[in-house]
Image (tube, rainbow, N blue to C red; front, side, top):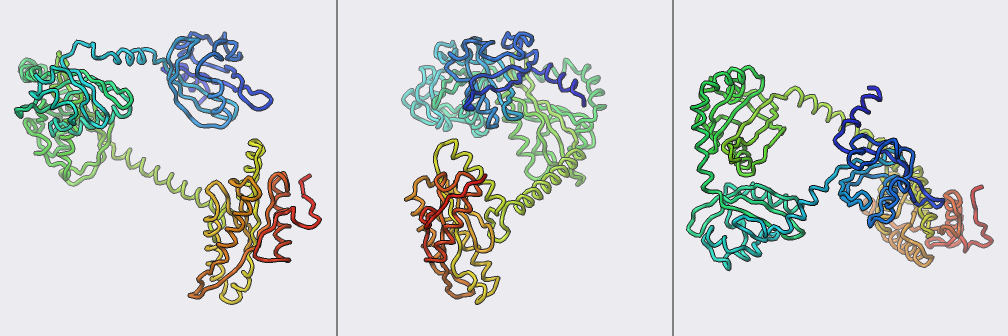
Length: 568
């Protein structure tokens, strides 16, 4: 597709879009950023016009941005320089608006912001903070562990318990069992700091009767502020659905003709979750000869797959009491004839003119072919990722010990040097050569030698931290990049620990075998300021100690007449 297609998408996006370039000072610290392009929605949300800001710095366009409590330049600069994707909600003092901002970097030094104005949403949250002033019957404060903390007097009249009996008790103990799943889902939303509005469930009175309670709840940290009302009497109005059935009988004939020509299964139920009707496609899926046979049945009386009737009923209960639709979800269905299919389902609540849920409307769409194609694509992607991982292992890791190989070692060493120069700190590079390894191969065979190298790799890895790197660079030679070591005494401690670990016996072919290790140590930056010189100097130190006193360690500057190597 040409660029005009993608530009059309951006121009018509409901979210504000802006493309920027970060500007850094001589030290690489972000000090400003430049507008490159914005879409019309960005102009509408901010009041900033593209022709006025394109090519300009943000400090020119919004001079007051440096006075904001939130450091936008530093935050965006981190994303532009080091990558990543973040989402924040911040108030812009210069623009006097709240924004939800998603920011990511398509390439280094550049970043994209996608914004939406949430000022009205934030205002509603402030209004909910004073919810006890709302004119509703039932008021309470609870915590996210499910305990009533404070309730008002009206609760005594509604549930028949005293305030003392309610406060401190768990509200889940009052819930009707059929409403428990929907209530736990609502509690999960509150746990995620999301408001739950117009939620209905049943509460048990002291006399055993259940009352329908409609809730508006607002989380605030560990607490939940809620206002509710008893709508039990309103539930009786559901009989309006049946009255309307007779009045609309003539219109239903035309509707039936339309529904039966749609290639999607459609059904509708009453508030007791019994089927009122369906089209021909759905009746076939349900194993019925005619749509009329479904009237009065529920999902427990239809030959769905094992246990699916109970699942569908739980879905419907949640929809009825939450008032929230369940859209575009997929299920695996085995039809009455034995044919297996993938179905995309949608279920929405049906409400009367008083906004009371009186039924459910649903659709079933056969997506078997699409699903099979998706599964084939996922399998191809899985095999591709597996192949990529295997290629990465072959390219960067030693096959025998699974440690980083020479190639990966140099990459990590160069990266460590770069970071350490920036942090103005240091680290140690240790060149470890095994003493007596040749005799192991000669006396026990190469298979035993391989077993020993694998065990050496494990012991070396156990001597250092996760931030350090242990690599095998060939034969019985290993290196350790000790990023966690910044002082000479600390390096000596690690080297001594490695020698002690490797001196302990190895069990090869049922026999105890021993080896030793000679370690040369080069410190950055004292003994070299680049990867080649550090490796060469640690190797020289190892060579010196191996040919003079095996089984110990030596710093490069302890070599007689040492000269630090540095790359030209």
